[in-house]
Amino acid sequence: QVQLVESGGGLVQPGGSLRLSCAASGTISNTMNWFRQTPGKQRELVATITRGADTGYAPSVKGRFTISRDNTKNTVYLQMNNLKPEDTAVYYCNSITNPVNWGQGTQVTVSS
Image 1 (cartoon, rainbow, N blue to C red):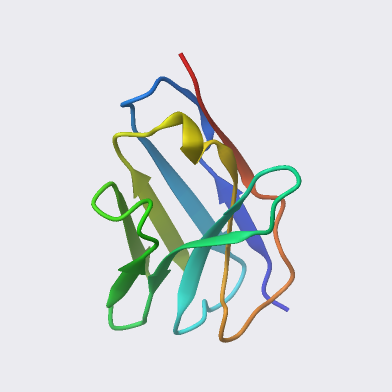
Image 2: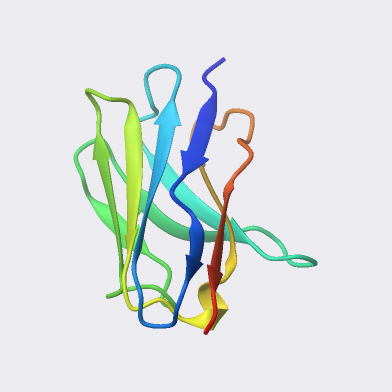
């Protein structure tokens, strides 16, 4: 089964930017998603991208986050700009339509 490895998280000040990467060990699904989760809350869908690069975003991140993919590298990215404290979470990638085992995620902390 394809394994997913997320990276690129860290500590950033409000208004800052981060670029997350999700590297797959095999061919990524036609539709890929980024999710985030904070303690005690359900995992939240953040962004979606199809193989044809159509995208969708949660209202809370629209205009600030950009999802992209490189099919030749089996990698999905999430560019996060103008970060806010409420974006603090562990970020995961996976596919809603063809899910695989969850990776370890990458921690994003937005704090001054």
